[in-house]
Length: 341
Image 1 (cartoon, rainbow, N blue to C red):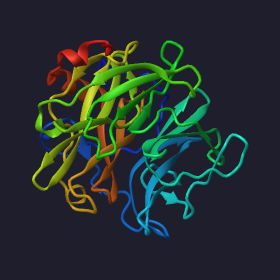
Image 2: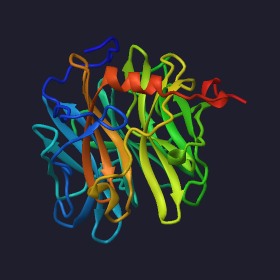
Image 3: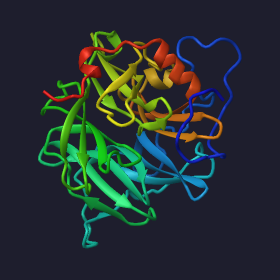
Image 4: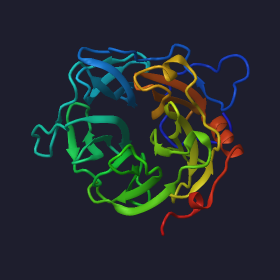
């Protein structure tokens, strides 16, 4: 393990596969040889699972999964795993309740993230709030999922919560948009003292001139705290004559002021190249949603959605990926400013 350290719990049983023999092309990140780890028709009434989030829990692993039902409506499903690779997913979608314990289901729900802050697990997803907006829920036992008020009005997507408070507040990344397919393309940051009232909005990152993130960008896996700053895997989108292409990028945010970008890799880390990334319901998609990482070894397992049809898994080490981001970094003025105008 190198000089860069992750400031997070140890997860000695995290999924891992050693780097393949031979030189990697591009970034030091490699795909699981047995990808995809979740295939089509994973449970009854669900056609496809993708864009999903996982987390360690009680020595094993749990996850919240975007399940595209056979009627075309996405809902969130719960799953368990001993090894983080082979998953048992409930056939019934998660049933949410309100603060009074009464049933309170979203009309649809997709692209969940899952983050532990202190003693509570928070789930974020996109849902209908008279337009596409961010949904929130909390749980302490993965038995009862209690919804919290929507943090923002429409239109907004790609909410990602930081795994600890910063300067006393909860901090969330999001991507404001309009009623179309997110022609606004930048990542913003917001703070809250209580997960109810949100403010102190700051601009974090813009789209860039690089082809793979020239249309829009959005938060991916929950940021990882490291000795270099917050390591964020995010998605970048380009437009082609044959549709969108979603790739995975990497950036490092300031540890105390995460609206400030310290390093931003001009190259993608992963882009669709394998059959399960290029071919599916929505082709050419690599969409990061979660990591499991072990601070003792520096190992990182990255979970990502593939072609809106599968879940894939890739691996890297924190010192190698941070060094790669730093050595290929290009930051612009609106990256490095505090994000207020």
